[in-house]
Image: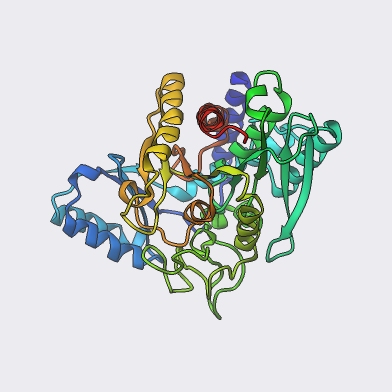
Length: 426
């Protein structure tokens, strides 16, 4: 695979030298990294004000000792640097031209699609479309008819089929405990569906190694929650950083944050009432068909569900409730114990250190999210797993997929084994 990547890099360079790169929406955008230790309360307020001007800025919030990154429009870069200097804050430029970076990534992705067409398996060489992911789980169900079951659980706003895959050990026993996993809530977080796909492959194709995870548990996985947004980000460099759904939210704006659309402390702190904002909560709770699908899945398995896991980027964090409040659940020790199992396994395997804790305390307030909803519905363990950054943060290049998804699997498997031990089948 190393030889392949060197060849692709050479081809990319040839394309650049031939002048094939086209200007795009993000041409000239810079991404600045600010060390969190240097951030004062005044600067935090300034960042919150910058975030409101999302035509020129996007603040990628960070905490837990991780630096913040800010994407800045070319016309505002002088003002941003002035703001940093006024607050005596150190910063560095981590990307001098986001548009050029995205163009190179899209050129590479196009080549990879030609080099690695879908052949019944989804590897880690490239990112795949929603249609390819659906075809993959359908093909698995045909190949493993006693163990793998695919169900259409709803449609997106643009009528894409949303399908779950249920993975069992094939012994035919009913009413086992359930682990429910989803990915692809936010459109630009491509590594999330990739991690879900790798999880599916491991559970299906390595039964002997993972027999303990399937003996008394079934796994239900929805690889892409927001297929419309996910497909939209794959159209071009201009759409790559899209986050929300694609249902119109006003006369002039499109999309709702599906992870602020759940009917538990809906539209409270951490969510926006502005239809144009990235964290818009929707016109009402469950206004988005995609959120309705996830909510229905949660309730369908709440009586048997022992862990709900939603995969996002970027972190690395393992976050548990509450996201709407700084209060901690009474069972916080159980949540922390399971999260730490994932943390320790990943640290030992790769050296990556995840920050673990409640969403609000570790990261930020995010009311109306799916993890809080699942926990309130009865799942004793409910996590948001924010995968590590790559590229500029949300856009790990294809060359990063393999190590990121394998590392994620190590953490998921460790947390699942802890859940299996803590919550045996009654």
